[in-house]
Length: 171
Image (cartoon, rainbow, N blue to C red; front, side):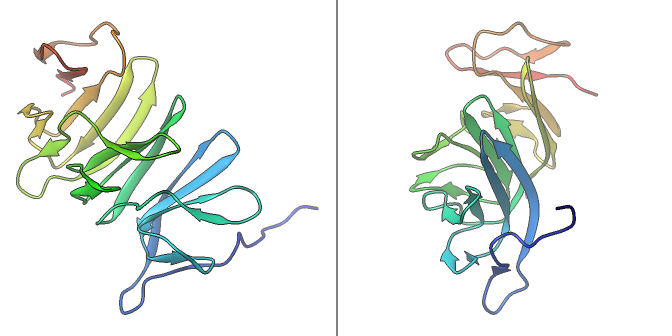
């Protein structure tokens, strides 16, 4: 029937105020991200997956809060105030392929760099936030990550040879 229903218990973060800030659907799974260390009794690190039956960790998660999640093809993209995802360095942005975490071409940088908005579309992954670099290149508060050889959109500020990142002028 209709109506609201709880989904597998709440989130927790002993000694701190836990929160869920974002969610994304990838296939039949729902992912939640924020700042928490357990969900529904399962130990996690800021990100968890609901499969319709129970909660599961997404690998080792991240070492800091997640502000936004987006599905991009078969991958889940995560961004926020973190420096590691899984066992590797990931400067504020990473992707989960269902098996492990991978950094996203150098991530974002700058003083207190955080991705606060992200959307995926046919031209790639668009991000915005408080960063001043993306992939080690100038990108004042907005950038686009291109997973394949898609054409640039807008004015390319800094073409980067040998990587898949394009920094576009968005405003």
